[in-house]
Amino acid sequence: MSEKYDVVIIGAGIGGLVCGCYLAKAGLKVLIVEKNDKPGGYCTSFERDGFKFDVGPHYFGSLREDEGILFRILKELDLLDRIKFVTSDPTDRIITPDKTIFIRKNKEDTKKELMSHFPQEKENINDFFKFVLHKDFLYILSKTKKITFKKLLNSFFKDEKLKSALSVLTINLNLPPSKASALVMTVLLREFIFDGGYYPKGGMQVFSDLLAQRFKEYGGRIILSRIVKKIITKRKKVKAVELDNGELILSKIVVSNADATLTFKKLLDCHSKEAEKVRRLKPSYSAFVVFLGLKKKLKIKPPHFVTWFLSDYDVERIYRNINLSEEGSIKGKIIVFPPLEDTLLSFREKNTMRAIVIANYQNIWKRYKEKICNKIIKRLSFLIPDLERLIEIKEIATPYTFYRYTFNKRGALFGWQATPNQIDRNVFPPQVSVKNLYLVGHWVTSGIGHGNIPMVAFCGKRVFRLILKREKR
Ligand SMILES: Cc1cc2nc3c(=O)[nH]c(=O)nc-3n(C[C@H](O)[C@H](O)[C@H](O)COP(=O)(O)OP(=O)(O)OC[C@H]3O[C@@H](n4cnc5c(N)ncnc54)[C@H](O)[C@@H]3O)c2cc1C
Image (cartoon, rainbow, N blue to C red; front, side, top):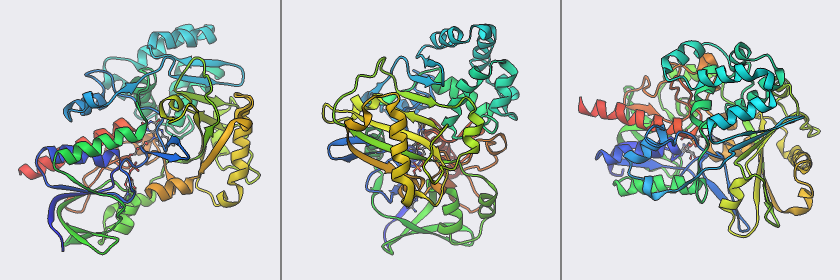
């Protein structure tokens, strides 16, 4: 039996790290146990033959000075001077079957760009921007809480191509516009897309390493490469966690940053009502990702963070055919590829590149992944001639890979699907029916979205506040 902690956090994803920082800063004795050999969960980077790749996010939002959620968290943790974020203008490029549309850093410029492509929708575009950026958030909430993004777009626009171009952005929730919550999409557009993305200089691992370092400076302890096997309770009250080496660690409080289904169905040693709940909720989709190390540096003009490659205007059909077919057809898939990170990440004077295709957790990867990968590369050659010849190394991540890496159910990218009926604060709150057990990260619903870095960081702060309140009692 080892020493006793005030709080043990299972998992060093961004939710766990931020929560740990606040708790340790407040003087609590905190331990984080992470199964991987580095902190960050999806927000990590890895190296192959001198090339460096990010695993998950391509950029964050909410870093607007003094206002952004993430900005305020970094300020409170005294980290603003210790990390640099790169911005880009334009931030995104949307390629549709017959247009290339840029999302600019400045909202007014994005508005003008959209108006130049869809002059007949000029007034509606103006009204849409006014609505999305409305000062009274309660007004937005009342108009969007119960409806889908498709319904919201239909209430503003007539042009189907414009609706499709904006709908491509629902890939940020991995959902078709007919299912994606209008509220969460509006928040994303305000905080993230119309406000410009931010990329941590040096790659995503730099951001996670910094949070882990800060946690240790505040007096916290991290154990890497160890899996929590059980959460031990006595009369429905948390007592300890058991590690995969058999070690028992006593703790007054346990915070799980791990997958919600895993937490309640496998880790917890007693029955909970959440174990029933997780069966009813739908996890978000996963992704098929191709990582390429290229022999030379490409000039991407103008430089921008992400390309959203929409080869079919019918976005709904793309999601109807979510299962990648066995022949490896990727017809009509949305391919997202973030090219700017190459310049920021590569050790050498060479490019790295990622292509991300939304995918389901299927049983076909072993046999077909090479085939699917080659089709994706062929499709990208349409945009980057000679791509095949330029490839020095290639790696593939399937939904299985994402599951194995983080234990997220079915390799889910963003926690629960952000549909109107799965986003409410009460759908999956952080405080659960077992005493002294909390959940943190993208499986906790906040009411305005849960599956992205600013939101999981905010969730970390929210759980800290709940624990502090409890400790003061
Ligand atoms: C391909 C991709 C693209 C994305 N793009 C973006 C983007 O552009 N912008 C954005 O903001 N977000 C993006 N996201 C989403 C974002 O990365 C996630 O929502 C966020 O990182 C989730 O953080 P988390 O703390 O909830 O959990 P996770 O990152 O899942 O971390 C959970 C941690 O717990 C550990 N763990 C689990 N079980 C155990 C156990 N039993 N014992 C010990 N450790 C355990 C895992 O190893 C992991 O490190 C993307 C994700 C992916 C995969």
